[in-house]
Image 1 (spheres, one colour):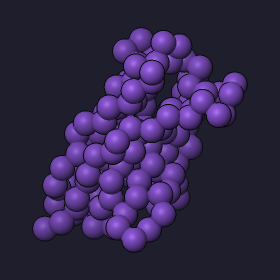
Image 2 (tube, one colour; image 1 turned 60 degrees about the vertical axis):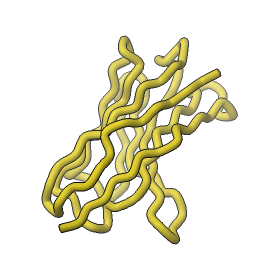
Image 3 (spheres, one colour; image 1 turned 180 degrees about the horizontal axis):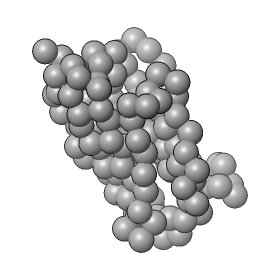
Image 4 (tube, one colour; image 1 turned 180 degrees about the vertical axis):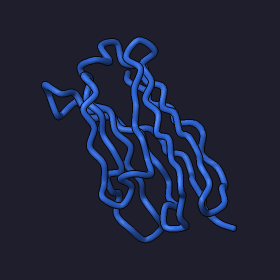
Length: 118
């Protein structure tokens, strides 16, 4: 059973920084593209960033230049470093793991709340 456990959410002031981490209980972590998604109240879940096993990254336009996704294949973790945070970044952030060979193997964490407010 694959489990993804997020940590690091919280309350931060506009312009501040916050880091999220996701620990994955995936045996062959290197076969998975990892990602962060978010869902704000009343909105659909949206892509924030993804990273492949070799380290290729993709970002939503709204976070480019402010957020950085990284992974440690040995520790089976993925992190999202967020800076210059804005109130519109407020959302529940979800960790995702999708098998690069079989897209039906798609897993989600329970999410962690990020609130950007003064």
